[in-house]
Length: 391
Length: 164
Ligand SMILES: [Zn+2]
Image 1 (cartoon, each protein chain N blue to C red):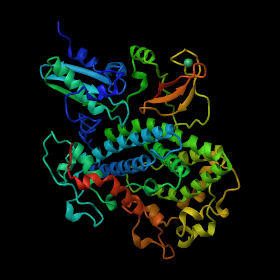
Image 2: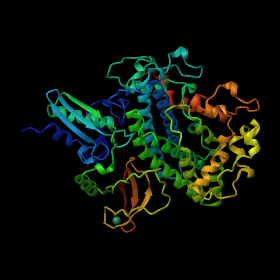
Image 3: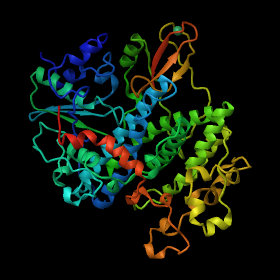
Image 4: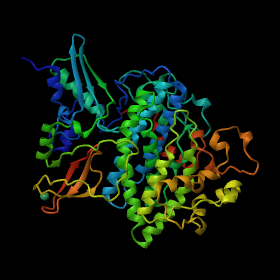
């Protein structure tokens, strides 16, 4: 292979499933012992890997959409690399989900929701067609077939990603605000999973923490650069943070028993650190009376715009971490969520005066904005039109 | 005397940094050879490393070419790969190719991973002219494991393998 001849480097091979050209992706967990340790609840592990994998997959896709649209070429390279890291995390996690339980794999066509694509046709399970996805749950439980079936064979209602990752970005400030929140949250969560009982999830988390540290730093620098920049960039950054804030409530709704619960103080402290450096105001607490009996129209009518109103602009700089932690319960929009969404209780427990806004419904329960269906239309387009295709 | 399986595997180059062998990069963790065949254990550099399939195939191809037919390539995710595993020889090859080798990876302390905003990073010397300082142009480069920098003296841009 010649270092100076890129074309030669790509072509001086003799096999036909080239990663640079084709679709010959092998199982990302190839050669990794698949055993689930005793005491690990397979269904819970599968569900949680699915949630974390879907978060990474959909966020990766949204990032990919910015390639060719970013302010500078260097940022497109950065965004593409971050998207690739997340895609790698998604592949490992979806593969692990399928290994842990075949039940998370897409159901056969009849059972899919109306919006779901027809599952890709079952094709030869021979090892020489590693990407041939299958609609059969049993076949989907192993290797590349598992990840592909999960990525390309499910409809929106079967995805478990938080709504935060599926949002379209109004501008670059919105992207870096969302990426800051996502990377900070994911880093804090996965850092707490480094010693989780399943060795694969623990290893994926350990690796991901290192990658997310760079992702978070990239997003944080852009938030500071825009927030502490021109009047125009500051205004856009403030708007992006205001639009982001209502989306953060959903992160407190974590139905998995495997999910760490202690990440919030770290998350709040990092966001405060960045917003302070960016001279961007942390959106203020909702008025006490509205968090006690939040009328749906105030929290749901215009989630992206309402928080930009002057009433929600903080007048005091968020500084001390402890103060931020204390204030978090009040200032973060999670405080306006109905109790049922915090405790996971039945629908009957909902107070009558709470109307559930779309934002109060969680992607973790399969409730998504229309944006997810748009993403899947694009992401799954080829898999739907050429079921099981390999080239 | 024909080379051992470990010696053959050590000659396979990285698809994305072909001036380095997989052994230079620290990706090959173990090569075991017994009557049943050869088992090579590799650890991916990054979660999304698109070259892992390629690396597995290249290892099998190199060993097959040397007469080792029964080859299994295992993946070991833990401990995670770190740039500290790049060998001294690998670092010398990077420098010779105009790529600045990584410094020591940050040691992990108890508590949250700190976010450092705007603090000066450690000095990274220009691999072209040797000037001890350089500036970062971009935090990512042609691959996730490299960043883009520029020398203030010779003005040449260069890549630096990130500490991870
Ligand atoms: Zn120089």
